[in-house]
Length: 329
Image 1 (tube, rainbow, N blue to C red):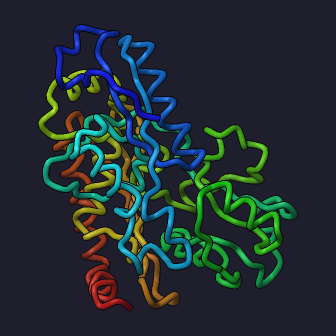
Image 2 (cartoon, rainbow, N blue to C red):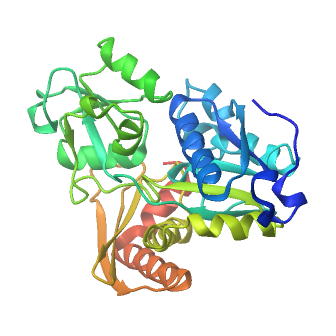
């Protein structure tokens, strides 16, 4: 999928169509849609020549174990970052919820684009919503955050692991392995699969993951021309909201081994930030929740609000939850 040409970082970006950009992407159908979406924007807005470098990541290959057991969400981005570091690619397109809170040295998050629907979707061939499921029904998800929220809503359900890309998960549902599954609404909408959504969970019931529904563009930290160009694709309300969300997770040492949710929404010029923390090993432990609001005009203010929310969760009793996650509870 790659082809020879000049990289944007080799020349002044004002040269427009003569410049050439390579996007590193996973090869799942959703990841390719996202990369194609960014390619189209770069071509249409800046007249750039853009190609895709498709890659299979460790996260795509290891499907028989939970992410928390094999290295976390970073398994979805390491190969793409290697392509950036080796200059086989100029930028990588990620679902932001899959991007670790701290990027490795030498990389930068250059832009976050306007968010699609951040909510989770209830998908089932037989039942219209979560409340319609019979006692003890089987629901598929491998997200500890979704497990935490589902248990709070329906403690009677049997929640079973579900790995694989979006199409694989839908196939397993259609084969009858589950009564229902929970997926990000954004991915289903982007792939034209809205008809598969039986219901969406409002954020009060199922708080999204940090960055859910948003696309992040990662580049080499020293690629100033590309960074300047991609700044024009930043959707500022989303950019500020996800800075706050990711700050919550970063402050709490967020990883796949900890059930944590954070979501920001705008109420006028105020950012309302909600966060929730569950116990990683004790389903009977209460779900800790916090909601804060503040005027946020810059990324540092958004991050400060996120730190404030994290501290509030710790003061509610979250320190014991974090210790349990560290100990592998």
